[in-house]
Length: 274
Image 1 (spheres, helix red, strand yellow):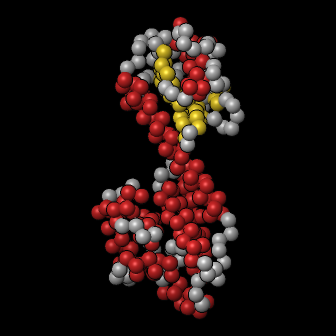
Image 2 (image 1 turned 30 degrees about the vertical axis):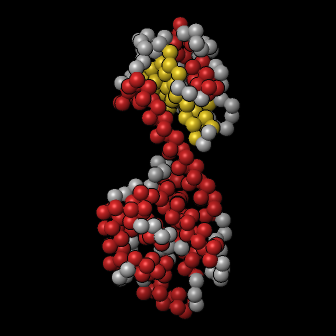
Image 3 (image 1 turned 90 degrees about the vertical axis):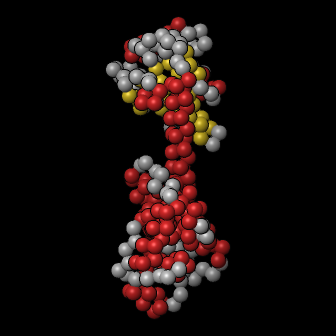
């Protein structure tokens, strides 16, 4: 917001389950007057945004008649005058508010508002992705199907979850959550390595034990295994189609495979895909 909108001060916070949220992230501030401030729906600029679920701006916060003034002391201590606020909405529910502010009583233009809305949309996408990752992790943590499971639909569900998890892992900013997601992917892949007879499985694992695919090569193979074309895999993984082709070629070479399907089969035998 500061970089794109020319706003010297930006701050905000997310709900943590209660009816109020606390301002937890600040940049450009010179005091701690706003840090930890609890904002209640209906109160102040942020509270009004929570209630109306739309962006609102005021040219002079202390003098504005459009908002209530429960937080004037904190805002005044930071010396803020002109201010805007935009809601962060995920799946129809307001999750928090982002603010931008000036220390002069000026009308904020379209540039500042557009930057704030764009920042809110980016945060919404990140939160939605993180929630989806948590949901898929919950599924992955459950006991995977037994190796003798014969219902193909069960394994197709496992494989779809595996693809979704790998695609999400690269969009999650939290490194600990990302590692947990990739760990769950490995668990799903290993769960399927028990298919077939034990002696044959052992021989295949020994033969492919030296195969070392990169995370992106596994991502591409997971998408291919789900029936995705190169273009569809590229869109799902946020890559260019040419990059997907390159990863696919290198994984085929490492697996000793001559076709896409052969590569998927070999990756499953190696325990790299469910």
